[in-house]
Length: 152
Ligand code: HEC
Figure 1 (cartoon, protein in one colour):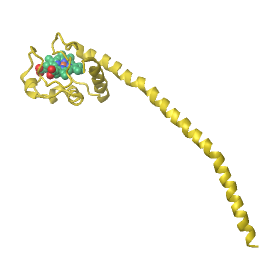
Figure 2 (figure 1 turned 60 degrees about the vertical axis):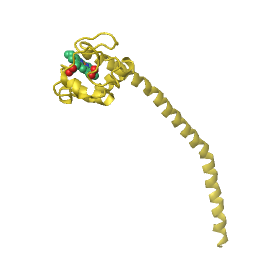
Figure 3 (figure 1 turned 135 degrees about the vertical axis):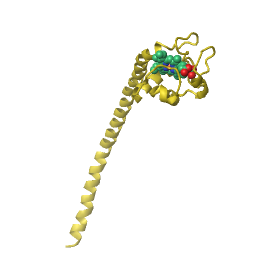
Figure 4 (figure 1 turned 120 degrees about the vertical axis):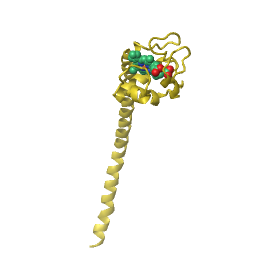
């Protein structure tokens, strides 16, 4: 009487095991497929980064009135060629304000972003007549463009 159910149990387990061994390759295939999908999503997101540089180039129109990107030449502002890693106020021959010369800021993604957010408060007394780029995304796009276009 008692042996019958315990006999049946292993049979049931085997069936369950069989079922899971059948579904395992399927699950692997699904995992592989989702891996492919994630990889594709990554590849698809790449052109978006390139677009940011394009957006940055468009935003640079606001700076272009006053800045060149080539090593030679200047406008109302100094050339921005090689600006990343440069100390503020050090382009030879450019008549900077005393505030800019005294600031001693090393230009990097972070310091340029902070300056562009609000030029007047970041370096009080500097002469760059630019109201600022308040959107963080705009500054990031512009800086991505500057990095690609200033010889850094
Ligand atoms: C109306 C003219 C004008 C515009 C527009 C302008 N700038 Fe300037 N910029 C200047 C001047 C002038 C200075 C020097 C300020 C000083 O000496 O106080 C300067 C300085 C700078 C510096 C520091 C350079 C150094 O050698 O230390 C950076 C970086 C800079 N500008 C980036 C930008 C960017 C990026 C934009 C566009 C979002 C921009 N500027 C828009 C006139 C301008």
